[in-house]
Image (cartoon, rainbow, N blue to C red; front, side, top):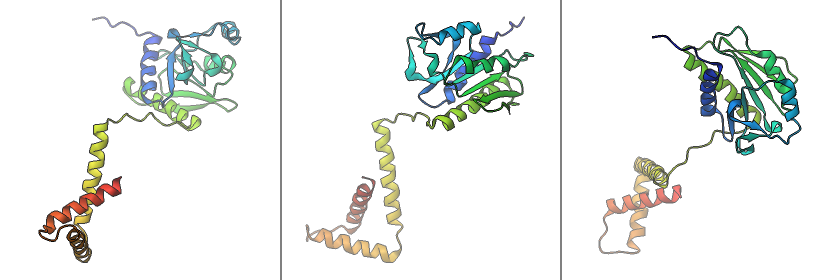
Length: 228
């Protein structure tokens, strides 16, 4: 079977999937082939003058409307080349600072052993990406980029939604743990607790007192109050 060569966009698409799996909300990576820029934005003229596309752009998802993006909102960009390419895309990555006025970091990779990175007004650095296989390399690059976004933009990953059933189960577990700790009280404290529960119960029912059941109920109520 003859293997079909993979295109640059194939590698780019896989990397975008990994970036979006790691990057914190509300940021999202977009493939330049699936978006357009606001035609009324004067910065579009700069893009046309450069006569090139920027492979992956990353910005706050709130500023993407109908697959259209304002160049001013792009804060991170990634230039990609096919795996094994002799070009790293470094010079093209530099152009992103001209195209996007509020860009913070630009990256470039040919999925070799380095990820090129440059912050505005700072010298370039190279991050090692020697992970194998290629799938792991996507993850490593995505983790580098995600870490930068978290640090610079001070954002946290979107927390997983928890159902009401899950919340109740968590609170019940907390009550069970507290109640268990009460059961393991030292003898002198446990004796004092039994005496107090007995006195409290007698105020309401003088005839029949089940101390063990009473102790359980009081501990359960106490644990509920603590959790609440």
